[in-house]
Amino acid sequence: MNISTKHKAYFALFITSTVWGTSWIASKIAVKYTPALEVSAIRQGIAGFSFVLFFLIKGEKLPTRKQFIWLAGMSVLLFVLANGFATIGLQYISSGLGALISALYPLSVVIIERIFYKNTRITTQTFVGIFLGLAGIGLVFFENAFHNNTEGYIIGIIFSVIAMLGWAIGTIYIARTKMQINPYYATGWEMICGSCILFVMSVANGKFIPINTIPYQTWLSIGYLVSMGSVITFVAFIYTMKHLQPSIAALYAYINPIVAILIGSVLVNDPLTINIILGSIITLIGVFIVNQSLKKQRDLASKITD
Image (cartoon, rainbow, N blue to C red; front, side, top):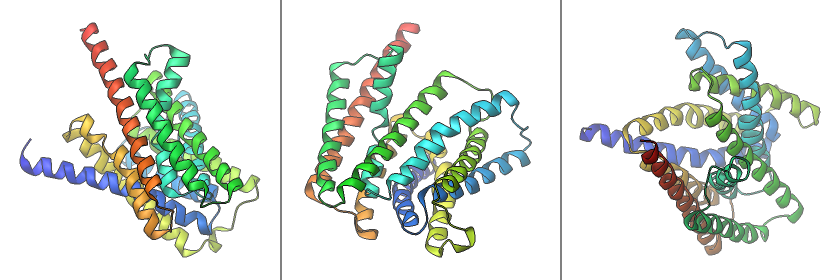
């Protein structure tokens, strides 16, 4: 790899880490003025149609009936639960805490894989990582609780945890049920399906406002989420995966919660204390340790197979 390409790859990693971190703040701003499910529906709809249109122009065929059923199922996990519920959570909790809970999904993957598939060992290293991750999030949880209405705060935590679990289950399901379709094209269809479901949910629960009454602050936030959070960052992430080692490319997952916490404290007055910073660092160290233990298990399984 020449120096220019390496520099571009690290810049792409910087874009991925910072923009996905600030996406939590953009969502937080949007839900101050517009119902959360509606915000998520509009965001996923615009992004989904953009992806699908791009690939259709490139010559991709429409999904088969079997593929569409699979895509609709995945959209519930990845875009209705994971994105939609995470957006609801931001109405009640800080953007930094939302990002931090989302970062716990590798821990959930380990536990789910162990309970239901028996194919992941809980080693001492894995256990330490899970313990630190939960301890850190617990510290942030209690520290944030003093700055929030307790009832609403618990609701936000519940929706955020469900969102994180939806992403974890979706990740496992994708890995176990390979579908013969371009994954990026599939993402577009999943976004469209998720958007339709979210719109129906938004109208059904009565928390829906006419499109022409949505304030400009929401449209600016959605514009940022679609253009930067979904399109530009998506391209940057693919570039980092292509030109950097996976362990380095994956660093974005540890950086974006920190970005969300720090910038959120400035732009949307999210609470920021020593305990929140300390708890966040402990949580991310725990997630890192779990990921390292999984990597060791995969490497060992690969050597045995070879």
